[in-house]
Amino acid sequence: MRKLKRSILFLSGVAVSVLLSITYSHVLRTLTPPFAMHARNTYTVRHTAENRRAAIDLSQKVRVLCWVMTQPQNLEFRTRHVRDTWGKRCNIVLYMSSKESDFPTVRLNVSEGRSQLYWKTIRAFQHIHKHHLDDADWFLKADDDTFVVLENLRYSLSEHNTEEPLYFGRRFVPFVAQGYMSGGAGYVLSKEALRRFVKGFADGLCTHDTEIEDVGLGRCMETMKVKMGDSRDVLGRQTFHPYPPDYYLLRQLPRPRPWYLVYDHYDPVEGPACCSDSAISFHYIDAVGMHTLEYYTYHLRPYGYKYRFNPD
Image 1: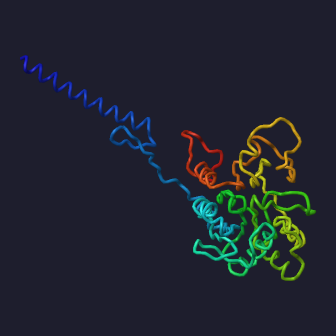
Image 2 (image 1 turned 60 degrees about the horizontal axis):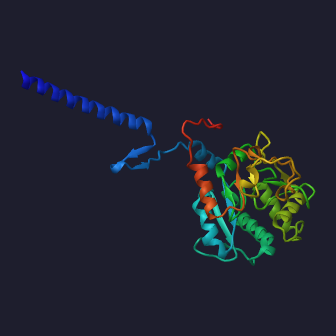
């Protein structure tokens, strides 16, 4: 009888142990869904495939050719970080330089230096017009220290007709009557705007009359009757940014415009309301900042947060 009781107690203990083990494993899986358990109590992040169907579909409907202004000495410490992050999301990406390389770069007939930036811009758009006019719908110029969110750019362009003479970017006010778009923040031309820009130089209506790239292009756009699009979102917040996020995001007491907002066409807002949830670009981003923005934009996800924007 005692042996039978001992056997029953032993089997009961085993059953309870198994039940507790199963329950514990279930609790762990419930409490730590993003992680996979391994030996020695270490964890590794398990990334799951995300539904990017809306972004993929839009990339075929709104084709963007990106050309990045760079130079030979920048390829390793700047341009390769563009290639490794946002550059791969362009339908076509061209890296424009004064020398050809296996990076690869496109060689333009220009010299390097700030005084040559507008010549490089002219030659780049002439090259694109000759070789890639029908390969894309919109044509984005960016510097090799500009970070661009292509999905937001495509979404912003999706309601516009590329056969109309339009260009978009961060609108500045001085030097050109209708204004011009900041070069550092990047700007994007419709197919008709690209045609008119190239025709302006072919017909002698536009000239290289300044070393300042974005002002020069703005003058030619005005001459060729290319309209400036409003690049702000539906709440009036900016999407193109000529400086990094920290220049805009901190709340400030009322004050005169700081130097980096003096040229803005629209009244600037400092603090979190400065920048659109669908921001498109930030300028003066170094290599570390490029990968940091890549992580924040495409990988960081707060648990349980319902996104404010859903294309479906």
